[in-house]
Length: 448
Image 1: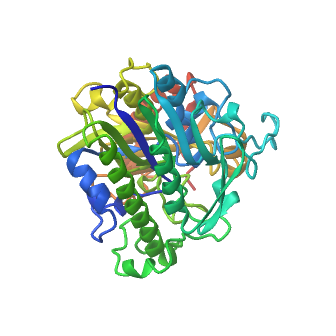
Image 2 (image 1 turned 120 degrees about the vertical axis):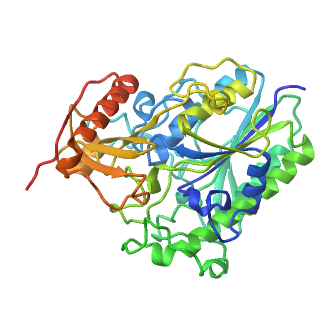
Image 3 (image 1 turned 45 degrees about the vertical axis):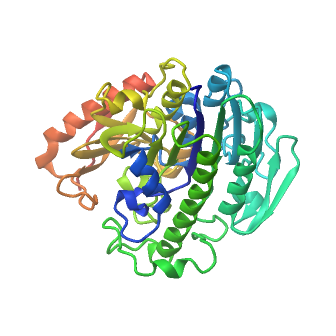
């Protein structure tokens, strides 16, 4: 048996609790649930940053956002940086990408930014495609070239590929076309959806027409209950979008299994970050809370079988080393580790490290028992857009996840937890030193 085909399906802004395998009562994800019953579910998977561009940069490189140079939206993946695509191409793989890219444009608006290069409504040039050389149907800012029910992407030659109908269905059609491409090589196919992300121009999630009424009887997640936000008019549509994603996962799995068999392809389903529905800040993510940083992660295929549920702490940093290892390459020694090792009790984490930008310049550490975060002092939005890091951070949040799993009681100002805050601060600073090579200070919050 040769190297497996590798298919990555990436949703955008999807909470794990939207999925049956993660506890959703309503029938949202029967195909993911079936995939999980044959594969491996990671119950504690986290993003590296709760923001589209930085997390996607990590998914393509296996490096923390600040190491890539994509620490906020509007900073392009550096040309020539080793990526998942270039690493697998070197192992003999056909590499293809379909959907939302979000890694080509540089804003060029702030001091110190790279020169402007904007591809929001233009084709992404070959050198800015992260090494995907064989198949390409994508848009850098899919929300600018399309709406939920029509628009276009661009093919490898820069020609418009128009579609009508629900966007998730259309992207899956394009991915299925790529799967049908005859090639003697094993394939890497990365399929990136915009949903269930809210439509920026509308300020709400848009599901397939008529589907939201199926989910009006939803259970309010514990972190949202009693909070304002906009989940009241968004959540049923959100579940509808997630259910459509799952239906398209089913289409992909049927095609994959029909072509090569259930044991000969490695399928990965995950998301770039979560969604707190504007209950924690002005936006939908960009915070240290589990609603922002936890993601679904299910793998099925060689080495990931038998319906295993792993409670290991894992990160999106682990995807590139996992896929390189699955393709027969050596662990590339990046910021993450192959999930093969984690699954067998080797190289286990005690915590995950998270960087936060745009809403703040912040850092967080999530352990099994606590979440602890810090942010740079000053005007949050200004600093969060201008600075990748800071020399001084102020304690911002402390949650006891064992007694407060929905993170509703911030203990950061409670003097009874001073020793614990210092211990977690030391752990956080150790992660900053390891991943960033920096030695900032953490100070206590001011007390009125």
